[in-house]
Image (cartoon, rainbow, N blue to C red; front, side):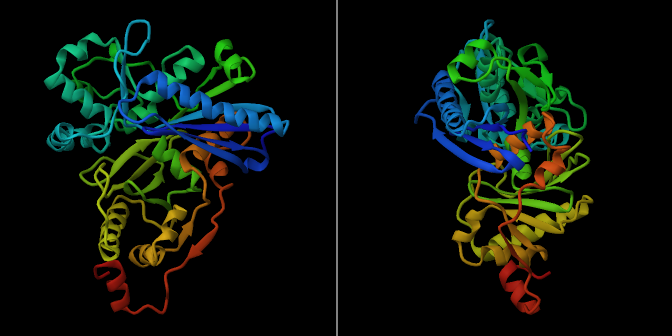
Length: 403
């Protein structure tokens, strides 16, 4: 319940913003997506889009006479911008890989994974900072503070620049097990902690400042939950509730991940901190890059290897949640079920990271007793079970390998 009101989840992505509005029983009342201007992204232009998306949802609640009880943010974990001493932007928003950062990511990837648990890819903040350390040291030192786009948005809502431990983890800058900056990551990035925002827990609350409240027609001092990284929040928003349930993304990235009570750092698995002693642990099958088209049999082969890696780390999969977009491709759900040997549950057609952020807000503000209880409010819309009539040859054909 949200006490006859609404909570917002605001996903500050790398190319767009999504806002989900949850009402009574944490049902999704509506959601909005607005894209940033094309080309080089100015932080203030992105901020305008975020405010416009929130404003649309405020108007929706006003027409339904629903008071807004609070909101939480979700970050992408792969944006970066520089601020001056007065926390004003000095750079555009850096996001996405380029040939130079891709090459650097491959070179420092093993060190990054073992020190932070993160996949080093060309769009990650750590790799971008490490590239500046090698090729643009003047810019690196001129910037007073580096942060993610979500942190900048938060600063305009609350007058405080804060970095949550979840996004810091996703960006490759946090230690694996402890909620503190990684000494090895900072060495690679060529910066010290003074050039980064203070670290806070994703469930920490800060009040909405008067100026932002007036602009958005929201109550002054509205509680704003700092929020977390998009991937673990998306797992939450898709209804992943325990360590036996995996989330699978088949869009711009191929990722299979579970929520785990402990972090893992090895040569295959990545780790991203969420909150409440929960980590997202998984396999980035695209290695942080936009994947090419994958054949059905090739997808099965990748999933078999990913499932085996998770089982070897002590996180076996009993079922998997997938985005409803998989239904657009014939047989994909059946291939996933055959490859992993578990039921495939189709998640609701909702923006998962924004919904996950709203669920985190509900948990923090007392509208849900915990993360698992919040995730249980997302029922599957359809289940595809492994076909017991499939022969061994059929399974091998669908999964692309023998089991």
